[in-house]
Length: 111
Image 1 (cartoon, one colour):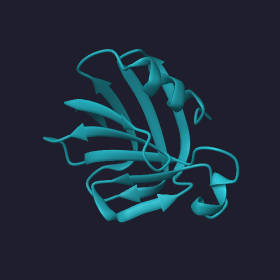
Image 2: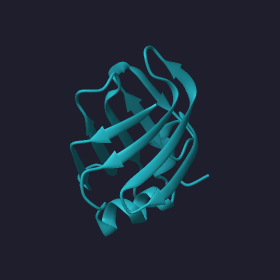
Image 3: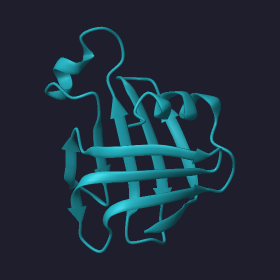
Image 4: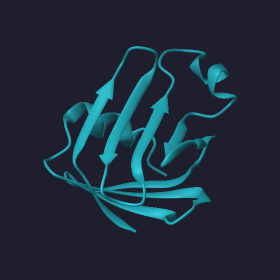
């Protein structure tokens, strides 16, 4: 599913949180959270990330099967679970180029 992101944000308060506002699509939003610092993976039950889409009930530790940055305005995400009305593949097109901080943190999750 190809979706447009209205806004992208990154926060560094408790780990690293990258959020995409996908309002207007069936996906609604996409959150990708990563631990920061040594030993952070313990909070993530042995995984290097947490992903949430559409609803908190659909959140998963280790839920990203593949992630590929295909341009400064585009990201392809394949989940290892299906989301109702969405499936397991998303191509996100951002309204503006993603910031260096967002790109740098997403690159650490590329698979």
